[in-house]
Length: 269
Figure 1 (cartoon, rainbow, N blue to C red):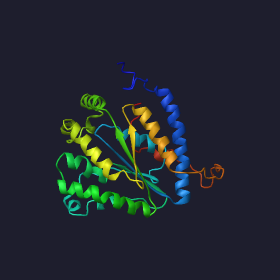
Figure 2 (figure 1 turned 90 degrees about the vertical axis):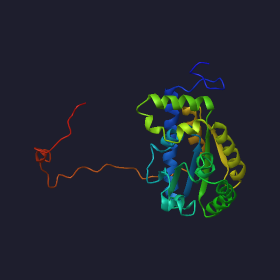
Figure 3 (figure 1 turned 45 degrees about the vertical axis):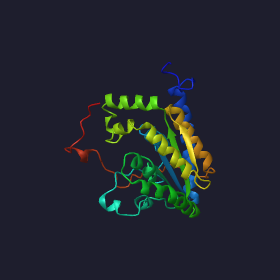
C-alpha cells in the first residue's frame, strides 16, 4: 500500500487543502469563542484514546487560533500522594469551567478506565466502582449546566507502531515517549477490552462517546473541529468596528536613544 493512502484506500489529504479547510474551521471557532463568552456557557471536552492516537495534535489544531483564557487545556501529571488520598475525580473538578469557558482535558478521569486499569495502578474493585459511578457523576455535571463532549480517538495497531517508531528516531518528538508508552504497546488487546468496558458503561444519552478515526491526522483534526462546532449551537456575535487611534505626540521624545547601552538579543537570523 502506498504511504499516500489511508488504510481504507483513500488518499491522505494534501497539506494545502488541509490548511485551507483548517483556516475556515478555526475562523468558526473564533465565532464560537465569542458566543461562549457572550452567553456565559460552560463546556467540557474530554479527549481520550490510546497512546499516539493524535490527541495532542488535535487539541493543538483546536486551540491555536483562540484565546487560552476561553479554551483552557488541562493535562494533569500523575497524582501526588495527597491527590491519591482524595475522592478520585476531585483533582479534575477543580479545573471545571466557569461561565464563558471551554475546558479541554487531554486525558481525564477516564485514566481509571484505561491506563490505570490496564497497567495495574488501580484494583479491579476500584475500576468497577469507577464504571458504576462515572455515569452518575456525569449526569450531575450535565444537570448542573455544563455541556460535556467526550471524544475517543481510534487509531490502528499499524499506525500506532509507525508513530512510536517515528518518535524513537526524532529528537523533536522523543519527549512524547512516556514511561508508559512502550510497555502499553505490548498490551494492545488489554487496552481494547478496557475501551470496550468503558464504552459499555459510560456511553450514555446525557454524555455520549464519539469515536474519531485518527490514522489520518489531518482528516481527524478537521472532522473533530467540525463535529464540535455542530455540537455547540452558536451565532455570530455582532462586534463594533475597530478603529485604530492616532498616536499622541504629547510628551514626545527619542525613545530609541534611551535604549543605547542596554543588552540586546543577538540578531543571528
